[in-house]
Length: 310
Ligand SMILES: [Zn+2]
Image (cartoon, rainbow, N blue to C red; front, side, top):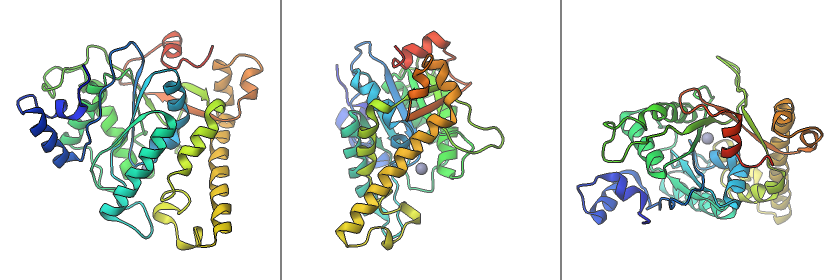
């Protein structure tokens, strides 16, 4: 039976409606519907802001979705300080609208938690929230940031994901949501930070077949990219329509390059997944590193979780 995700998460002793209201009030959740138990893969990706999951895993998500697998992108903060001019509720609403439209293009579900941008912390409440979401989604795969990153929200989202990696299996932690019998596999997104250790991918996926779709999804998030987000300025998107067109084209090209750079940076690893000359032909890629704290799939199992290598 399809159940709204969060009301069920909230607390078994309340009526569904009351619980939904309470949860909406506390966390800003809309009722995300948990996917059916249809044997398909279930993936939940956490990003600190409404744009992180899309940037890091938008292509792979679109490929999973095209094969009927169930993907949920969760932004842990609402992004309400992520603009040079706008802020607060109006910005959070704008970013939610943008990211919803992006998810529609990618063919996936999305959720934005109502935590202020710049204020994500690894609290017990947030550990519970992520644990419940992973359990309710019955995730096979969980993704998030590494805990060493320039942005505190990224770091603590990474810590929260790691904190959930064992707790999802502990029956008496959040006993209102059934614990997981099997730990999911947890993965990190790439970054360029080297201390204390650089990102080392375990899986590198060619996203050439969906690159245009990913670029379309990213293009919709104008508050972040065309307008430059927190460090942007009015000059980036002047009123002249020709200049706006040029700016949008430059943003699109920048993201195209970004995924080309990932393919080039991890070309050797691509060779382990795409035999012979195939790996040389990959132009755009996304890369993921397996976290040591969850399930530890072998190569065969990784191919089941990332069914893109046949
Ligand atoms: Zn971010």
